[in-house]
Amino acid sequence: MSIRALVHAPKSAPRGAFVELRATIAHRMETGYRRDSDGRMLARDLVRRVEARFEGELFFAADLHAAVAANPYLAFWLRLTVSGTVTLRWLGDRGFEHEERVHITAT
Amino acid sequence: MNRQRRTLVLAGATAGWLTLRPLPAGAQPAWLAARDALTGGTTPRPGRVQLEISPLVENGNAVPIGVTVDSPMTTADHVRRIVLLTERNPQPEVAVFTLSPACGRAQVATRIRLATSQTIWALAEEADSRWWQQGVEVIVTLAACVEG
Image (tube, rainbow over all chains, first blue to last red; front, side, top):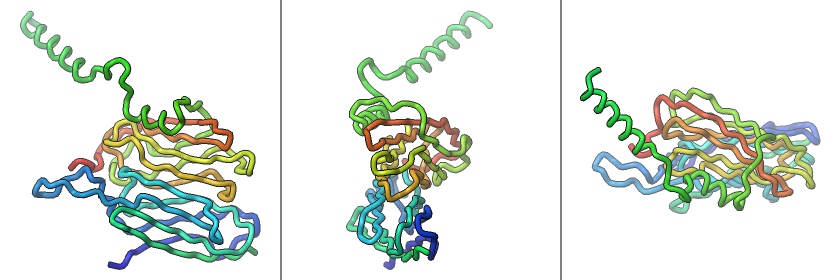
C-alpha cells in the first residue's frame, strides 16, 4: 500500500526568514487500547517518531504516543539561512517508514 | 425529608467520596510521575510557555493544540524540548518535541486525542535545563474512543 504524506513549505523565502513547515501523513494511529467488534484487542500501530533534517542535519524531532490523533499533523519552524532540502522521515510500529523531501530556495 | 431518606442521601455522598478519594499517601498520579521522569523531579515553573487549546472541545478525536515558548532560540539560549502531557488520558504522555536553534522559533502545533475532560500540560525545557509549564483545563463533550 502506498503511503500518502503531505508537506507544506514555501518554495522560497528570504535569507534568515522563519519558515513554517506543516506535515501530515495518512496513518490510523491505532492506540492499542481499543477492541474490535469481536472484543479482541487491536494491536498498537503508531507512528512513533518524526524527524526533520535540513541538508542532512537533524533540527527537529517529535516522539509521538497514542494520544496523537489519526493522520498525525505537525507544524514547526525552520530558520532559513541558505537554500537547501528539508527531509522528513516518519518511523513507526510494524516497520513503518516513510520519507518526503522539499526544497526551499533562500532569496 | 424523612430520616430514612436523609440516611440514604448521606450514604450516597459517602460512596461518592470513597470512589473519588485521592490516591493513597505516597502514590503519585501517573501524569506527575511522567513529568518527574522527564524533568528529573524538578517542578517546572509557571511562565514562558503558552498553550493554545480550545477550552470547550466537541470532538476529542482530533483536538488542535499549539505551544509557543518565549525564547530567542540562540545557541546559548534555546528551548531543547517541548512536552505535552494529559492528566486523565489512559497514558499521560502525548508527544515530546525536540528542538534546536535552527528552528528559529520555539513553536509547535499538532492534533491530539482527549479521553475525557481534564487538564492538559505543556512543558518546556531550556538549554540550561530550566523547566517551564502551563496547564489548561479542557471540557470534552465527545470523548476520543480510546477504549471503545
